[in-house]
Image 1 (cartoon, one colour):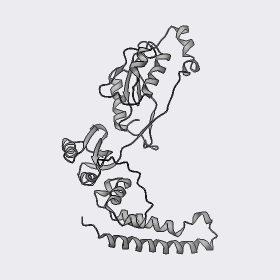
Image 2 (cartoon, helix red, strand yellow; image 1 turned 120 degrees about the horizontal axis):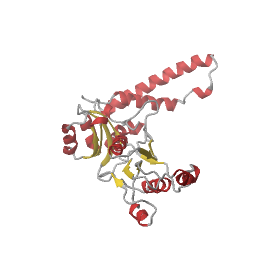
Image 3 (cartoon, helix red, strand yellow; image 1 turned 45 degrees about the horizontal axis):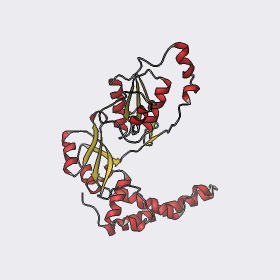
Length: 291
């Protein structure tokens, strides 16, 4: 698709902004007769900015429409697009490494051809999950739009970030009465393997050496993660149910990887599965892959 010249692009945006201002003025006059609340009226500059962004979005190519707005705007900013002359305070908050690459999540039909194209464009596939139609990859920023043109790709956005609900103590042992249940009922968790998902198990070996964590702990291959909140969770599970076999997998790596690790922990024998992780982009009004 042929794109309009930058100058024409800005002129069109300004005309739309003027039209929006005219509509706003007409609407304000109508509402003024009805005594509207001042809080409902947006300043003219705000309406102009909205019109500029709306006009810009209307000009996006089919490939650009598959990218998140942050990615499109970051590409435009680096190209010196006139949009940023009109909106100099527009921020993308896209984190790009010094080599020009960034971590992204693709919603796509996961095929060998798509994975090969990612590699051909200088990218690295971090993980891929055909079941969840998801790929996490590190790619050069300037290769995202050409990749989005692939028919297998439905959308590309910056990689989803995970956050842990941090815990540091085992006060739950007494709070739940587990410390009295164990001797009273003669149970210690034996026969009920526990699967744990968190960030990583960086100090697990040290905690095993000190007797604060059991030996062994089954870690799913390639899923040790990074960080140490997983070690803390292992310590807590060991305190509450010292006889339970423990398994671990990271919940980081994206929502599809989190979901796959839940399935893999169950397949490995876990009958109780716990985690302390959430993603800001988890769906609110419908189930996502983790659910």
